[in-house]
Amino acid sequence: MAELITAHPGLGSALLLLAAGVASGLAGSIAGLASLFSYPALLAAGLPPVAANVTNTVALFSNTVGTAAGSRAELRGQRRRLVRLASLAALGGAIGAALLLGTPSSAFELAVPWLIALGSVLILAREPLRRLIARHSPDPAAVPRLPVACAVLLVGLYGGYFGAAAGVLMLAVLSLSAAEPLPVTNAVKNIATGAANVTAAVAYAFLAPVDWGAALALGLGCLVGAWIGPAVVRRVPETPLRVAVALAGLALAWSLWRDATAS
Image (cartoon, rainbow, N blue to C red; front, side, top):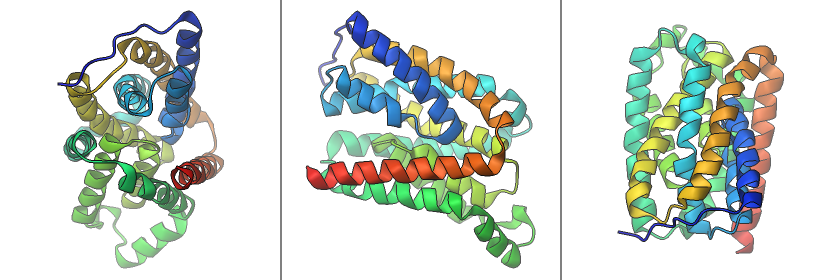
């Protein structure tokens, strides 16, 4: 069992992580980009990359709790769908956690920016792609479930392994597989990605170098931000929000690609 990091962050670091947690909760519940704020904040607080990655995954458990509380209206009547998607994502998250703990990450990290960029482009191209799907399958319920299930499993695996912008990828998958308002798709996305995150977090809590003080400070902020996020999604027009999510995902993909090729 890996040695656990139990140091408590100083007041300055704790305030930084709390503020980053609020931003992460908002970004995660609205756009699936929680790690855009949380991971750099953990590095700035002095955590080494591996500890920052696993601590980030544990802290983001709060996102799932917050978004579930804030999205009750959108999640009403979605139980069977949520159970199916969350089960697939959780399985993927468990596989991803096992890969992170047992394999080198360098090769996979080179593919991460391209995966995020692909998800962002799919979100931008959602309407043309939906029309293309409708030509072959006018009934949205008739969209083949197997490809969707495989995609959810793979996104869950990615979420458990690395996690940055996993919500962007999940939102892209769900947006193409269901004709529904964006707030509903977004709420379902948050629960599905949360299932993958929770599964990985449980593994990391016992087997990885989690900094519990940092996780607590970050998690408290995430809880607040994630609870507020669904209310923002209800009030912002859908198209500008979707474009903003996609552009933010592309910016993150470029940043990660630059870092991966520079190292």
